[in-house]
Picture 1 (spheres, rainbow, N blue to C red):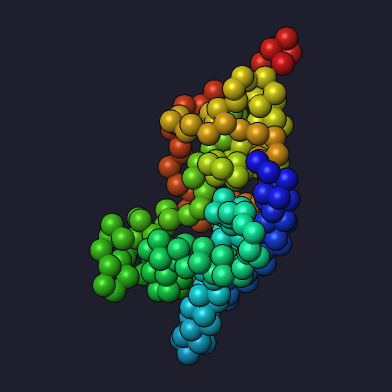
Picture 2 (spheres, rainbow, N blue to C red):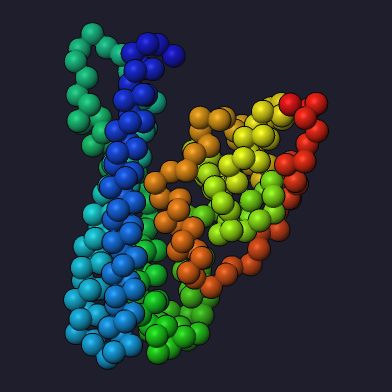
Length: 244
């Protein structure tokens, strides 16, 4: 990797991280709006629920834009090509954003966050019943459409909602307890992700508590507990010190 690409990657990481902070704030706002809508629905204030739903739809659109931008910024170093001519980074980022949006099947009213909002309101008076126009299977699919890929730490077996210091791999998005996974990375050669079938190699600098992780865990905690992830679980916290 050239020095230019290295500097570009560092700048992209910083810029993407800043955008992710905004994304996290928007996610918190969406959660608050959902809770407020549930309260309004319980109180029979359907007009206010409708207004909130319209606002949530707009917020979700902005959320999509920000998440696409954050990902596009991270992708730019990989598509950047050195040239004698000045690089139009604005156009480069815009092209990446367009690719990301075109590849996504989740948009507008089909976005999981908007569907979760509608579900929460619907469940106030119709818990367990399909929403109008949806089958029972749709409820199951929607309630499990979350960004959390594993609901238990593969190293300790603890549910992610009980982890004291959760971290997530930047590459494969799997979640672990911080201290055990750092021990695992130091002691395993190579430290392949312990989730069965995942080929990613873990790196200390790429296993972090990203801005959205704690929010998503809290959302999982407040929802009905899903089935425990039964993938291979090994306890690497008790490895002999000689193995380090």
